[in-house]
Length: 200
Image 1 (cartoon, one colour):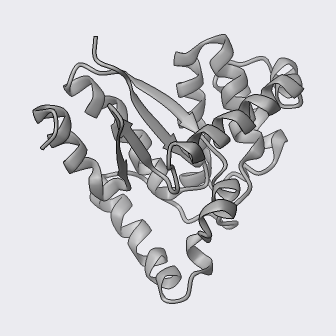
Image 2: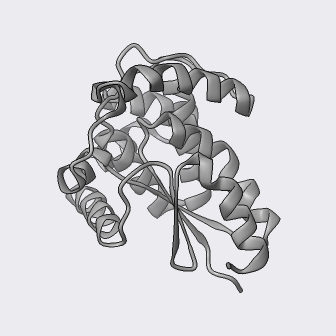
């Protein structure tokens, strides 16, 4: 069986939000599955020298036009978050805690967190918000709260982010298909063709 597609993203990335809506369908089209791998882009930026989009001169103002325009293009609801970007430590910890229990339900949680942030302007930097979203997705609140604070989960998040850096991940979304990296929503068409042809 063909290897899964590794899907790296940050919960505070609007382009990651767009990709999350399409990645499973892209994989299924080619008989693949997806390994969802949320990471902490802030930690990656410390290595790459990257910056959050809004803080970059010229590019920042452009991005604030491109993001809602792209959402409309992809047919996705979008509400510019009041706080953007935000820290996503609690969101990533909640995901990996849930993934250890049930990977499919963890993906459901990930989509709910992204929806909460980019459609409802919920503050996903707040652990209480993440726990509330988790509860709405069917997770037990007390257990999730304990999971977010669990040293084992914290270590998992660090290992996942460190491993992403080793693999060259520097942005969101970032796909790795059979060792081949694709960065950004504007590379989804290339990824589709790559999966179809086996590369070129």
